[in-house]
Image (cartoon, rainbow, N blue to C red; front, side):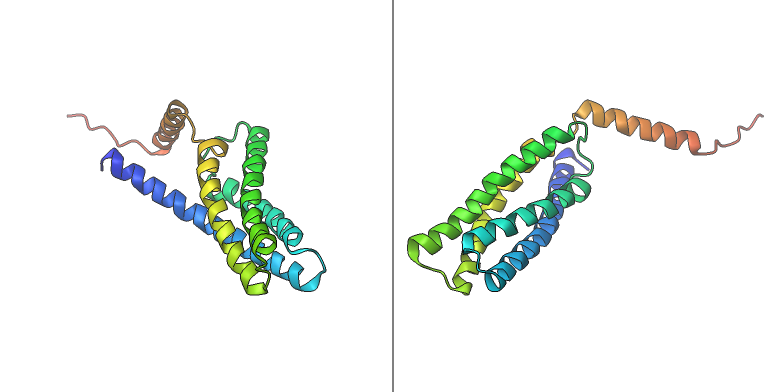
Length: 168
């Protein structure tokens, strides 16, 4: 198998895992925002910001422990700080679209809110995927990954029983 197809396969798996975590976060986001919109008197964008923050928490856990569990874990404070900073930008993108729809165009029905929430989440997701994989959950440097693989192979080789040698 050549390196190109291996890299493409790895990227495809990463996108699928990112999508699975994102789908869960989206369900949480929509659920919380719609509950707040229908059960409280909070303004629509405020309620949506709260829903987005809850989804960000769910997403961090999913990304760290599922999508990017094999990535560098040595600088968790830096990782969490960057994750929150980029998530905040995504929050502004998502809620900026909703704000423009409601306060700029007067589109404030439940259906219109949800449509523009989808648009905002879509734009925010594109930004988040790029920023998380580029800056937050960085791949281990090749040297460290190779050392980890060699260590694993050495341990596996040490545990395997050796074949008897024949003497003629």
